[in-house]
Amino acid sequence: MDWKIFFATFGAIFFAELADKTQLVGIGMSAKSGRPLSVWLGSISAYIIVTAISVLIGTTLGKYIKPEIIKYTGAALFIVVGVLMLTGKL
Image (cartoon, rainbow, N blue to C red):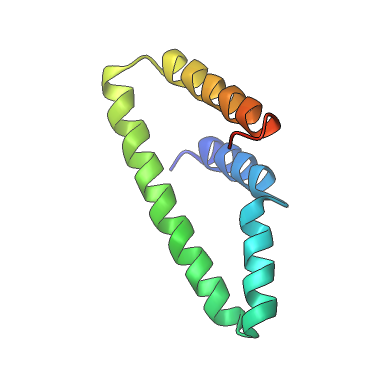
């Protein structure tokens, strides 16, 4: 295992998800249901599946497309989504 990549990925995901809308959903679901364990297990299961899908897509794309192109495309998509959110179209 490459611990440098592990900790870099952990840090990036941890800080990106901190106070994200998914966290607010977890807070709301837990408060509404009163079942924190069920909410936690559901959240963890969803994260596992979403992460597995993203890693598979990244691995597949990495075989055919240069990593720089993937990075710039991802950055451009973030900008587009941000503009759409600011203009109220998303």
